[in-house]
Length: 491
Image (cartoon, rainbow, N blue to C red; front, side, top):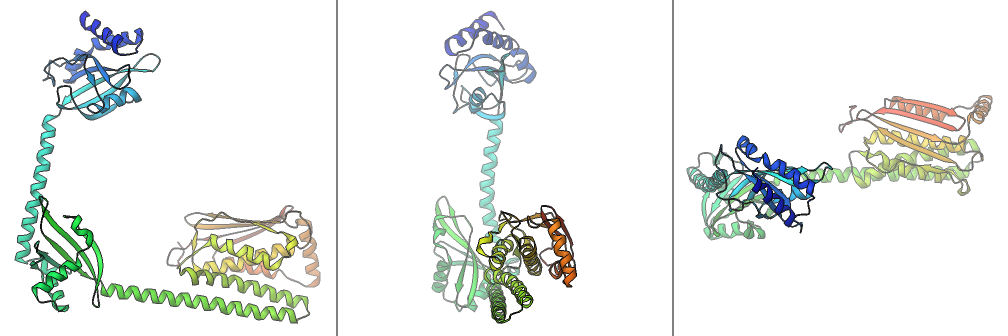
């Protein structure tokens, strides 16, 4: 870099930037290498710095290649670059990040492509940018030519489509009815399916056909020419899917197209499915009501009997029925093929605790946060029975006596792609208390019917495993079973 150019760079930096002397020296050393770099890259190179007002960049050095044609006829050193013309330069100066392949407008109003990298001092601060510019006038012209050809191809395609439809060689095979019409809604073409539709609907007069076409066009179609819109209409006893398009050239309407598809059979099937779903929901509703009625009868028996053991048996049966009724209640009101296990647990636990405890016991249940874990209805019914038995067992044996100031039942869920794990934990009676009750049970000839039923249900109905552990802090019951897919088969 010659001495005058070096002096010019220093003067421009002093007049228009806030750069320090050391930073200007770094720019000067890089500027001396610009001619060689321009020849190697066969492109115009520039050094720009951010102006003092932070709103524009100033060109402080340049180099034109001798191995290729320059984009510029004259020098641009000392001229300003603005964000609207060279966005990559301003972004790199302000953000300190390199930009590749950005388009811009040069000081001589030519379209060019820029690669911009930041120039940093020894402290890692951006003091300017190095810009490589390449003329892309030829590429821009090619893009314009492609756009022009695309437009003409679309117009030619419409013409060829119209001619092909006039021949009616392929459209007779279409299931949809196709109608082409002019701006006056007069039919210019109708395939065989469309003609059959007109005959089926008893529309034969040309005026009637025009009115019918107009009635099938949605209101918003007028504001959206050359766009395909889809909607459904009822025409007599038929449900039709209408795809419509209005053609416009240079802002003037030239006609349009209708594609007509019969949805009547599909709609009938949908109605059948809705009726079947409603019927199934009604069955679940009645099963729930019947179970609750039986539970009510059993409550009457509880009041009439004087044997405590019989009363307890009735209460256990009532809880089991209520648990099954809960599942049918969810199916009755939501009509889902699967049930959210989180919802079952959130509704079941408070219900069982409330029915088996006195208000002063204050047994809390720490439940998993509401998420989504879909299971089959059969699994949900089995799990409702299992959870009911475990809660009853905790209330009877773990919290039967005042052994803890804050009785708590904790339930956690873990799921993987293949299995579901449920952990049921209470902080009730510990090892010593459970062993004492077990010895009393053996002496009186009792049995652990509830836990045996839980184990049988987990292994037999869920194809899973069940583990029970009694610790000094309480009881842990854990079950693991495979997930099922949407068909109710093990995945």
